[in-house]
Amino acid sequence: RLSKAYEHRLVLEASDHIRSIRVLALTAHSYAWPSLLAGKRLPNLLTLSLQSAPRTRREITKPYSAALHAPGLQTAALVGGVFLKLVAPALRSLTVRHQLLDISLLLDLLEQAPDLEDLVLDLDAASLCHQMPTAPRARTPVPLPHLRRIDIHAGYAACAFVLGMLMF
Image (cartoon, rainbow, N blue to C red; front, top):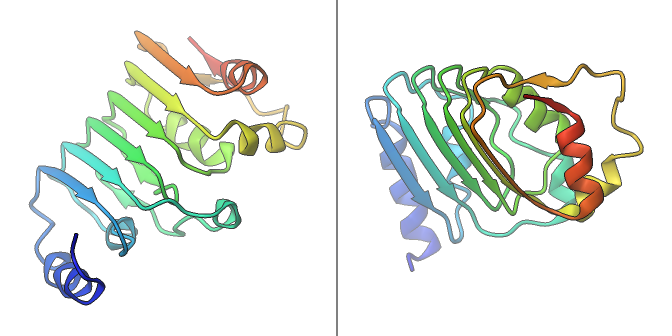
């Protein structure tokens, strides 16, 4: 495990050299590596895997304000930590695990990924259940016409809620 000082120095060095990366896999222990990507444009990125240190429920209302713009991104796995907004219209496979997030952020991402084929959601059921009564029911379900596989791990009510917000 890297020391905080070394990890911080590494992040600063890496931030200037990631624009041409095609495959990016980061595991964070102390530094919030996803913060390095928020607001960046990575036109060549095809595969992204982010595993972040556990965060608190308080951060559910504080996602990174800027999105990662990755027009060629086809596969993304976001595990733990704060949800990183993505602008990824070519996305085909998405895995979201152990993230405390506002369901509307997830639905926004899915809306702009119409070619999504594979979706794995392992979400904090408590945070989703907390949002269900206040979520905008007038929102149109997200069409995912190419979806071939969906795997949702959450409580029954949360699963039903998420499935009700999607259209296959």
